[in-house]
Image (tube, rainbow, N blue to C red; front, side, top):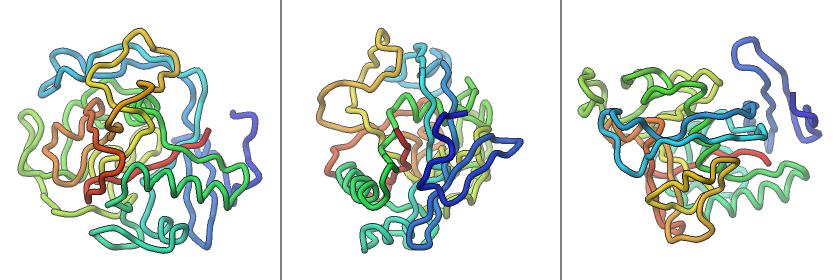
Length: 260
């Protein structure tokens, strides 16, 4: 159990039998919950014979020596609007993830949120933290197994993975918690919106930097993870990596935040 649990800013907290510790804050009536992600090690990237993998996913061991709190869902439009006073999203609905936000926009949100609630210490997860949380102890292409369906993730079902069946193409985002969570209680880690990570993007992982990696010290693009509603199924794999200029906005890009 994290030593500081529960924290003074928490509006409610607890532990459930299936997914473990959780904690939430409430701001202007909008509640956001987190899951406690225990420290551990995992194989980051994809195995050489994983269907439709690309070279920038080189498999390597990563060790995370400290646990962290990760938002159970992507940041919603409701929370963004409560903090920032406006809603930039294309697909508007309170419980849909905010999109059309740049990496810079997300950090402005986090800075403002942290200034409103002392000790909250929100940030974007590192790329390694994100994949560790997405996999939730699995080594398969998806946290749900060797394949995925549009009942589990929001992507273009006309383009299934490997020999999978075609599925629904929703043509827009869905509300958070609309689809099943992974084994650690995290929702929509596959598909719906790409999620900004803190790291600068590099085509190649530094496979020597395996303990609490934070990515390159400089770059021109920031990492995006998870895939989005318009992607083919292979783009929403656990190892799939995206990137974009930190100032760019798109209806494909949202975020979920962590603490620490």
